[in-house]
Length: 433
Length: 106
Image (cartoon, rainbow over all chains, first blue to last red; front, side, top):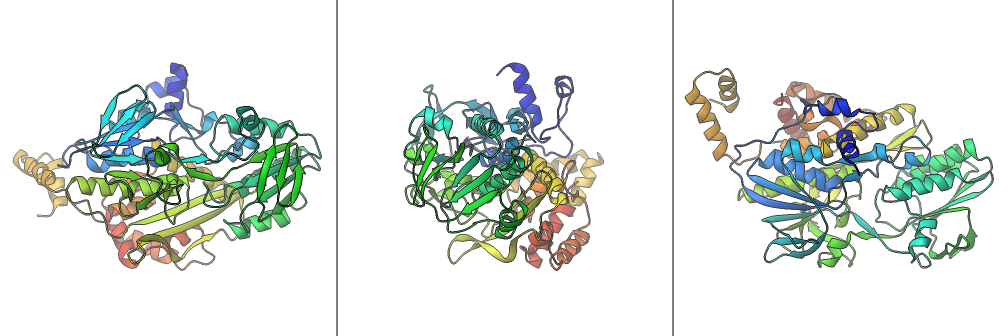
């Protein structure tokens, strides 16, 4: 990445796809609505954050906003920019580009005084309280926050990089998303696009169903007679059932074929064939989204104590139940909440608030609330939405949905589609700007 | 004297001693402001401290009673839009805390 790219990416935070010129960026001041880091909180400590996604960026920012200059925050991230998974299905129908979904880290560094370290973590010492990076350097901490996102299992048959390139998951937005877009464009009329949905929990519960809709909508308009076959490991649609049932049965009738309860035994990338419990299925394009688990750093450091796949945490602080002083937020943690960017942002705020209180010798907030919200495109100009509020239940020690405060849109609409971009831009501003 | 009055005085550039007293008072208080964590549930869509330039309605500085009233009204709207559904997730006391916090942001 060259210097110009770096600044372009950095400047995109908070303004989504809007084109912004280098000259405008150079003179851009901190927008007045954003917060400043206070100098007089009387709280001090060293926090290291691993991972600069939705959860990691937000916790770093709010540790400074709420903790003040006495709380030093180092954010370790291997990439130069974060690529948003939210809206990445719109790369498939050509409404967005991958670069329009990228957010750099210069705002976090310059506006909030977060120390950015580009690198890979090789070891965590939970007793000596330090993190070792690939270059051998060590970062001491009082509190460590890990937000690595998810890692994927590999379907039998897709062990090689070549096979994975032919059958992309495109479930971490990036190169594979653009590859899948190209595969879709290269389809001919009447050909088949197959996608697989893993058993829950996986990142963004409505996401795969949304993808089926966006792809079907594009094929209907551009490749007559083509089909989207959805093979779902779950017993039925697990998010926005009203919206997606209507989309599959009515809006995209005859284009989407939905099969619940499907087991994928293997995938042959050379013949583009899936072996399933329903038999073999051949397709022009296979988009196989594999089962998920917590990011490698969680598993490698003995923090995946929930079924060996996810990090068990105390949801008052997001402190690991395996190692004191280490907090795990976002998709990698095992909670009753969905794995998604909007709620990861709120988990990060609860974690930041708890760490600031703990550093000050106080107790965490005993009754936190989180909320999940998202919009799902059904066509190229309509969307539905989904929301839920979760409150801490002291009896079970978990976050539980507040009765009557969870649900989906009564119907898809163009208004929802337009609001989706407003929601996205503000969420990204709250996390990266 | 309450902290808000103190802040106003120090902003007016009145007695320097009073201003430094305010700073000292802040330094010794590590108690997070009431309602801040709850209200942060609004920031994803309404911006940091409810100050939005690109998102949904700007909330900062609206009167506490106005925010409280709006959220209570939303809870009974049928069919609920997203914010109407969201408002159903908070108790009256929690809505009061959120409204008080946001009304103090400038």
